[in-house]
Image (cartoon, rainbow, N blue to C red; front, side, top):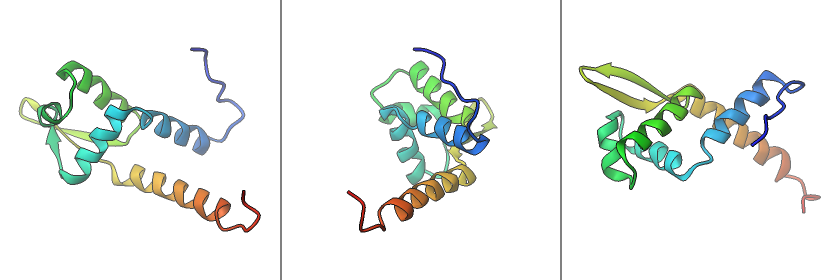
Length: 109
């Protein structure tokens, strides 16, 4: 895949694009859903509920962490993951903006 041109777009737009791209994989959405119902967990907990190998889950966790959707704290030999409330709020604000801007117009197709 080619390099995506990001210059010329606001920092906020580029950040949201990266966040939404990270959420664009079913495994990552399942991880987020799992973390929504589990206040914090270790990678092994997530591996138990997904049909993926531990190494694959770790790669998906890394992508989610890179974009800030999740954060992790070290607890002994494990990393406990949880959703980052600030980034989740940014996603919610963006979706709300799209919904209120587009869908409140009677001219909308």
